[in-house]
Image (tube, rainbow, N blue to C red; front, top):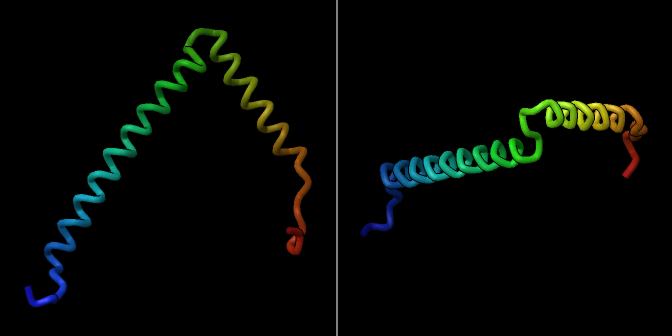
Length: 72
């Protein structure tokens, strides 16, 4: 080894890391979908619960006071 950087090896390592991160992201996306289906089933009660939660979130966002530029 001469100690010089190997751009090809670095590119392959980066490609492997990106592939691993994409696989992890897909797994997490699937987990979120499963949890979402369990929390809010597609029956009318689940749909109503999802709508109610969205309404509560939008009301909470409207009620928050805006912060000034220098506020911590």
